[in-house]
Each structure stands twice: as structure tokens, then as C-alpha cells.
Length: 223
Image (tube, rainbow, N blue to C red):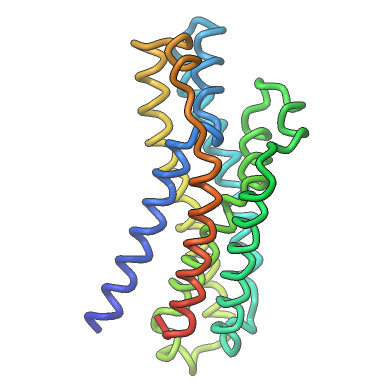
């Protein structure tokens, strides 16, 4: 019971941490929120932009997680699915390490369409894939105790978990990115941003490989 509780706590901690990490990464869009607020010269433009970015990110997360929640075969094949998901995340990380160029279609999205931009950026960077091993781990906790439940009930619980994971992750991301955006907008300005721009692409790709490897290991060990 204690070990199961520890596993659940660790997995939800990973959901929150990954959200904070995404929020800090400028590739997830907070510079666009700062730019929009400065161009419109209205304080209200900043929270509006952050909300649109959050909406797009949430839709991308749930778009990745929801199909997994509807898989009835997760009951009997959860270990194999978790291993396959981990391998997919590792493959995405390796691809991003090899291919450093940003997808050109992201540059063609007008900054005013921040929700669409955020959705496409999250998909292109594999942000949702990072959550898959964590989400499957949450679904697997206590699965032995649900063997006699109807598949429909289990699937319903998994769908709720998918929405909760996407929501908690998005709130964490918006908080981290929002804090940075407010500091830049209120005190530092775009000149500071242009001088101190940092790129987390390599760290991001490496973290995908790490999360995928952890997901594979936890599936093998039954955590």
C-alpha cells in the first residue's frame, strides 16, 4: 500500500515537473505572449495570450493521451503498451537530437493564432509523448485490484485520468511560463529577451530519451 502510494505521488510529481519544464522552455510559446502584450500595449493582452497558449497545449496533451485511455487491451497488454510508448518517446528524442531544425510550418502560423500555434508546437516537439509513459504508469497502479471490474468502468477511469494529467500538466506549464512572461513584460522587456535568449532544444530532446527509458524500465519492473 505504501509503495503504491509512493508510486502515485512520484508519477504525479513527474506530471507537474514536466509541466514546469515545458513552461520554462521558450519553445512552448511564452515569448509570444510577451510580444503580444508589448505590441498591443495592454496589460490584459498578456493573460489572454497565456490562456490561448494553455488551451492549445492542453488540446495537444489530451489529443495524445485520450486514445491510450480508450484502449481496452490496456488491461491485458499494459506492460507491452508501456514499453512500446517508451520506445516511441526515446525515438522522438533521438530524432530531435539529430534534427535540430524547427519545423517550418510553425513559422507560418500568425502570432495572433496562439492557441493553434501552441497546439502545433506541442505536437511537433513531442510534448505530449513525454506524458504517455507517466500516464500509463498511473493507469497501471492498482490494476491487479481491478481485474474483476468491467472494462467500461476501467476505461472511464482512464479517461478521467487522461484529462487530469493533461490539466495538471498544462496548469504547471502556464504557471512557469506565466511567471517568466510577467517578469519580462513588467521589468525587463524584449531587449533583455533578445540579448539573453536561451535554447533548450538539446536538453529537451535528451529529456525525452530519459523519460522514455524510465518508462521502459518501470514497465519491466512492474512499477
